[in-house]
Length: 202
Image (cartoon, rainbow, N blue to C red; front, side, top):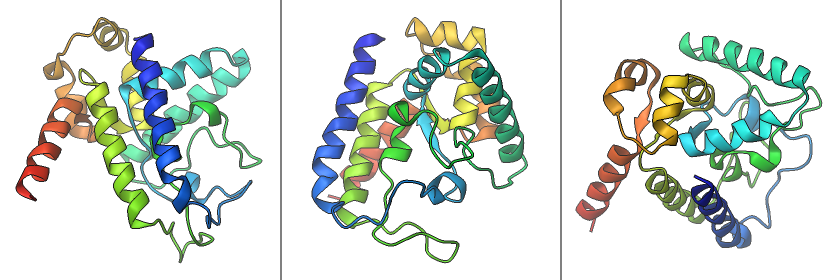
């Protein structure tokens, strides 16, 4: 699993390098957190969820407890189809897990200042690079899943699921009920579907 975590970081780094020329005019700055409060789902892979768990595990106990409560609240709001800010967003609008943030957060930037009337404006090139990176992330995490951050972390907090995932076993039937109700994607299926669409588009 450590090897996969290193490969995960390489995918992040390769994306940043390729996208850098298109981000020179980005309007994003310190304290700008529109994407953390109003941009919708924050999808991650299970592998990214493990990295986030590792990051949280070294935080002070009190912070871990508050994060657990925030994740539970976010999960309940998302299940009710309500808007919900990222549970890792602090009161000063900084990210608690910035160095371990998932790709969904790394790929987003905007060429204009965001507001309720102006959502993030990305270049087509960065959107395409992001789509390629997501496919790479899903291929890397081939026995895992993709879905909203709170839902994936909830799955990883379930010992039965975590133990199966950590040994590299693939049992999608065991998470099917939760997956259907929480819009969890099976990475192998997502990659296969993406490859099929790509071939049809040629």
